[in-house]
Amino acid sequence: MTAQSDLKLRIRDRQAKTGESYSTARAHVLRARAEILGLPTEPTTSPSQQREAVVLKVNRESARVRVFGEDVELTFRTAGAYELIPGQIATLRLDKRWTYRDDAYASGRVEAARIDIARLGLEAMAGHIAA
Image (cartoon, rainbow, N blue to C red):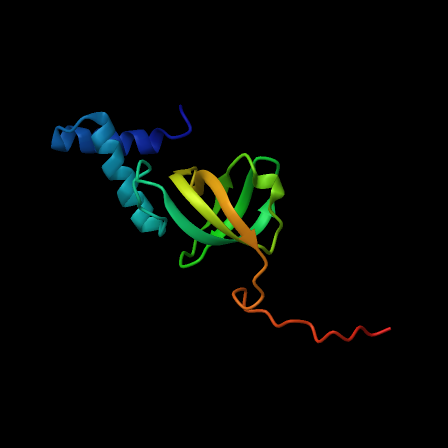
């Protein structure tokens, strides 16, 4: 039995009830699933959009980020991810978004990255270092 047999059953049930194609039924089932889970329901083929996100973790080809205004962390896949630093505010160009096994992903490119203490809700250190 496949790992997503339950999902495939739901898609085929909808397909049988509505007469839709498999891909159309799948899109409706995944959209409903995303709404229930509180995940973004944007179409994966939507035009690019520029968003700001805080960088949480960095790998060679991806970064874990939290987009401002969303409750979901996502893995952002891009060639320049290794240049990001956890704690930075990154301006991202999101070209594609999707979910896989209930995890959110996006791909695109990094437009800019900066440290913004006030935006992160932090206070600057007083400049005194205890010896």
